[in-house]
Image 1 (cartoon, helix red, strand yellow):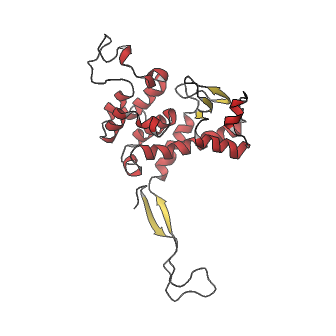
Image 2 (cartoon, rainbow, N blue to C red):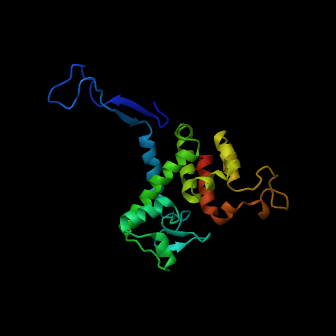
Image 3 (tube, helix red, strand yellow):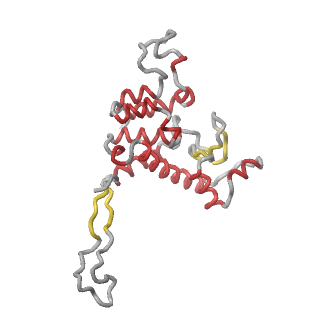
Length: 232
């Protein structure tokens, strides 16, 4: 078994070493093993869940015409960041458009429904792979409960991967320790250890609410609910 939870089995019986004349199997050559992803069904559940949540109020606005989000990032479809390399590659390969030049020219990219769905599906697949990487690799990712994995993927989809994800150091530390309540609190508060309350110096005072939560409170609450087991 490898780190993805893949088991291996031969796609055909091991041939004898004499070889088979006129066949595809050469003497002494063992066929390549076939990978079996033990988590394939759960992977599909999470990806389908993300697709179903596409037009929920907590999700990004689904727009087929490019827009700039609250941070000024060019965005399209279900929240795809057009500055990401994977999105640029997709737009180039499918539409033969250099999106950087397109934006600089003042044009606004507009997709058909089919193109928008295709880009959204591609984004989900890409962010899913990124979620496995940034959360400690596949071995750690699959050690989390299914609902928590949904939350991780949702969070990566919202904030991006790489350094943008890793900058949430308190959240990442809590997630590695499987302290899911603490991970949820880290998504909202600058300092989760303050006493509850709304007064200055207390946890729920506006000064202690972090930027991520301020920008996307509905989305943040949804991810927090995943970690707390409030969403299946």
